[in-house]
Length: 97
Image 1 (tube, rainbow, N blue to C red):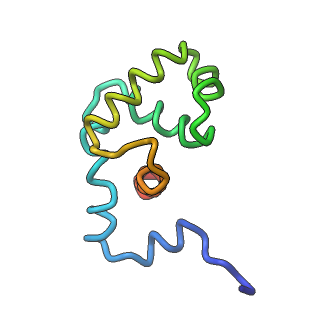
Image 2 (image 1 turned 60 degrees about the vertical axis):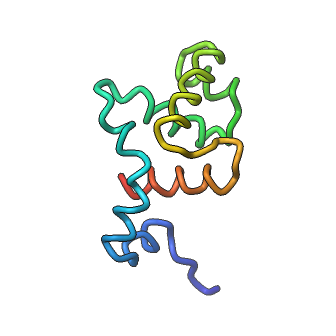
């Protein structure tokens, strides 16, 4: 453990087909014109799923954020109540950047 690889290094080590498959669930969000859903997902995950903190950072009411997250779940097929799905969503966001 002298030097742990960063997430970026791990993602770069993946075959391009694996990275493509990883980011695929976010494709419908990326197609959205104003990027609101992608940004909401990014902030929600960065705030460790805290509705209040994420809503405050986004400048929206927490019910607005809940509606956005429900739409994200519908479009991606990922559940934000699942730790595995949240991790996949976070990795997909990292792979996009």
